[in-house]
Image (cartoon, rainbow over all chains, first blue to last red):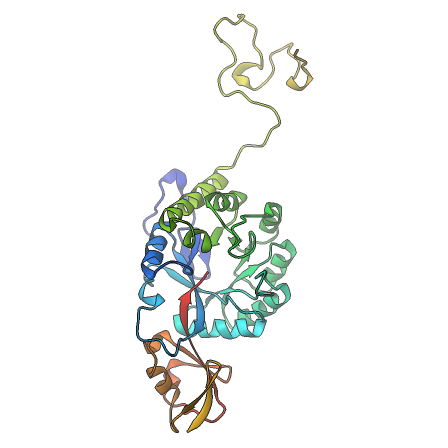
Length: 295
Length: 67
């Protein structure tokens, strides 16, 4: 990237997916918007560099009208086709091959789902399709359940990224099992992108604070009461969460730790300090806080 | 006439119809359509030379909004 968007104290590396370099770590879907215009504006406001699209049969009876590609600037966005709606590995592979023909990109977001009600990923079909697509030269970003061991298997199969679901697609339940995401982050080296279930800005921030390389969402913006405002919220949350992760959060502690100096309080006894200098260590002679008893 | 299955629906086409002809009849520009014949991709440059035969299964797909 020639012109970094961030000031030096917010410097970050781009997210690399195959040959694509993304400055924004928010990946945004193109489904469910009220209109193509609304979608285009939401994408722009979200700051995303990568948008997902789906492959579907052409409507044979439709008259010439605007199509999705007329509203997504391909010079500006990396287009990431998905295999959404596929319930077996073979159909997902066929869909990916058709997407590559349409877009000329080896990138694909693989989805092999178990059933239409839960839309939960089918782990066995997902692994099978990953192997096949990798053998056909695809850069495979794999939507999967939040199972750290499955993520390891997918990485071994050649996945370029694993994309565990925070919660079921479109459910807006957020990141249900942050510990599984944390363990996944420890076990695999490929980028881990939290995909699906993101309902609001804090869900994005939580995923990014855990150390996810990115977040992919669609419904959370598209079906918000004000999609454009939510696009801004998601953009800010992604950057906030990423910065918080890079900055390194403080440890969680059971007891308070004063931010203001404890000494010199008006009316206090000179020389008697509770809590110690700078509020860090107990003064000589003072018992540790945990050992104190107050009435 | 030649009976084929197009996007899952039975359809009669004139003899000699090519895959390129099928795509030309659509509301989309040809480059926004991908063609699968009997479960195998047919690249854009090869559509012209492939005439439809009885029983051919054709899928014509494009990109739509999705996550």
